[in-house]
Image (cartoon, rainbow, N blue to C red; front, side):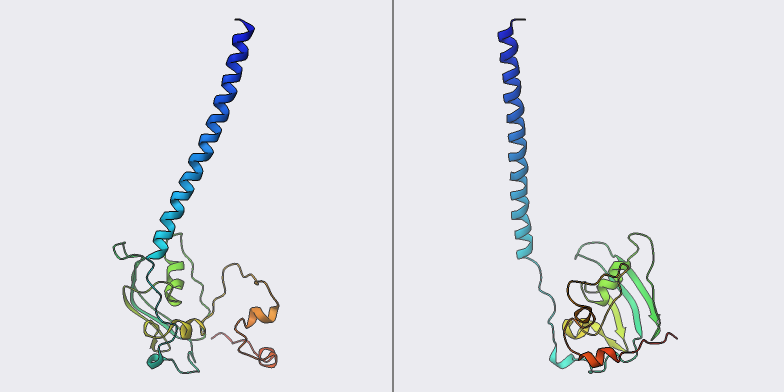
Length: 184
């Protein structure tokens, strides 16, 4: 083969390789831009959360005083036409009990916790904490009174004090005087 044809073939091979890389990057960027528009469209149609405070349904200041949680025929689905994720759970968690929620992947552990904090609203059934149905109170009133210890406890940025009382509701003396609850 003539050396000129070999050189021409190699130069065309390099040009085609660079063109393929350029068009692949361009196509990937185009896909990302289209997905961004789809996400913005989805975010424009998110239904609002329930109100933070419902004045005529505010729980007492001392609520929850005992900590008894009752689930009565709780059914949850994530979207309107999606299948049920929790299918009629009925159980009671005694006051003062330490509860560990365990199970296989997809068994509903995260959904149960999401329902307690009303990140997802029940399709039907009730969640009662000390006899008060949490589906009717404001989200701020509910979420300020509940806490959870995650599987991998991690302190967030800031001091230990701000991690114990992120809302700044208690004085340093009150925090130091807190005593652990004895389990029953």
